[in-house]
Length: 161
Length: 159
Image 1: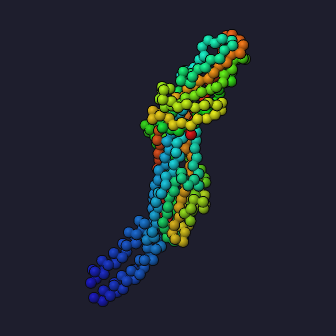
Image 2: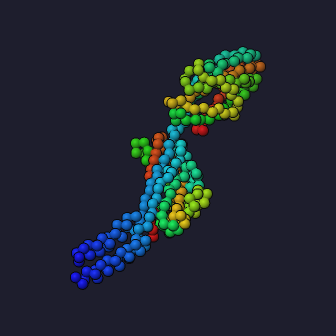
């Protein structure tokens, strides 16, 4: 009887110590992000009108015009801004009637037409390889333009959307 | 044989005393559950990004179950950086008000506290509370692109 009582006493004393494991609890969550690769925009072909007469009008179609290649995060949505579409190359040498194509393949054949507007934007999703292409065409009108070589920068700006 | 009843009586006294000891220390229920990770989404190299603890979609959230209306100690184990491709390290920063304690478990009813130090909070009358966490990720300009992650651990205890 004495031994049984001692055994019972030991169990009773041990019980609270076992419960103390519940006095603290921990839980975890993750911190996560995806760092996108920098966007790269490269002018891979100039919009070239060749040699024109002082009084003439020449149109270069978008598919034959200036081309930009964009490289970024695969499948990422981007916004493409027509930052600078010059209104002229020189006095009496105006540029207008801009045309555009955009697409995920390097060939203009399957690209989609759009109407470029200075300052306007275009939304797109990059190809699974992270690439995208823009083509720009325009009409050059010479009304007594000075002879010589003339040029102006075409600028587009691309950002993740 | 006369000692046996005495020991039995002593045993009964201990039985009565044990529940009190359990309530006063270790027998109280306490549990924390990580509900939602702290998510920064897609970032660009060189551009720091902050997530507010009040952001319902991107802030981290832990739910707490404890004794009704009890004071609890809350302490975070916070990573100083996230790990990414090839073991690349992306610095993380936690500021003095980046954590929030909500007795009502609602993101719009938080008491801000510093996640870098131990905080004392009181559970609701239902024994519940939630902790929300924000922070700032600071990718370097030459940070390698890819997926980055780290682990935040919250420990709660009775004082």
